[in-house]
Amino acid sequence: MPLARMDDDVEQTLKRKVQNDHTKLFEWVKYKCALLGADVLLDPVDSDDALPTTYRIPLDQIRNVQTKAGSRFEIIHHDHCGVKIREEFMAPTPQHCQRWVSVLQAKLLAPRSPVGRAAVRAVSPHEMPRQIEAKADVDLEKYDAMLSAIEATSPPLAKSWGSVRPASTKSIPDDTADVECKVPKAETPLLRRWTASENDAEEQLDILVRVESALKQLELDNKAAAARETELRQQVANLHDSVRLVTAEKQEALTQLREVAQERDEWMGIARQKQDEVTQLRDELQNARDEVRLLTNEQMRLHHRNRDLAVHVQRLDTLVYGKF
Image (cartoon, rainbow, N blue to C red):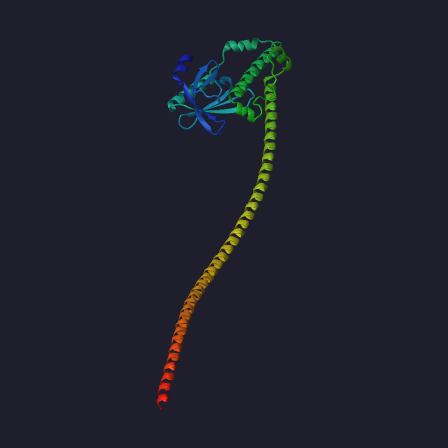
């Protein structure tokens, strides 16, 4: 089957499993996939600032293509540092998945260009270091461009980890002569891969040290927060005790106030009773005074009457004794 016909038969839209930087969860993101030369190009369908514009998988770095459950398949390849990467994709249907797997396996099993092999054989030992230098320049430039894209599209990730650029690529100059001076003449791909792996290991170790120091600081902060929480809990308990004591004192004062009010009401009742008794005594005294006045008047009347009777008796005596 011709290459163009084989590419046209494959569905171009696939879903790739990508980890979200914010939620740390895996999501299925739609990509426009195409086989261009010796690379598999992936362009995201939806524009997202957190994703690179184009993702490239070289066919010569693919080690295996295998199907999974349903319409999913997996591509196992190596990056420029030799690290094994597993990429999982999902096709619209199982038929499209099988078609993609067949096309990629055919690409992997296809023989390399004889012209390229002849050119490799025709290279002299003296020209080999130059080709290695040129390949190193291209790899470094690709890697630096990819890291620059990640730093530009994902500033929160770059800020949280300090920098996504390894130490081996932080100061790569644009001048080709400087790069050639830094790359040894006799450098081999294995040595370059080992150096990149060593730099990645140093970077990971640096990240682990920073994470460990951050965890220790977080542990100290947690201990201080726990001590502060214990102190605040003790203060809250003391305040609760004070509130309970004040409430008890308030209840006791209210009880005493009620007792005093009751005694006051009793004394006021007694006072009103005594006042009524005094009023009654005053009335009785007034009545007694009135009776005394009446008796005095009656006594005076009787006295006058007695005197008048005495005068009459005396007259009668005079008349009687005067005749005899």
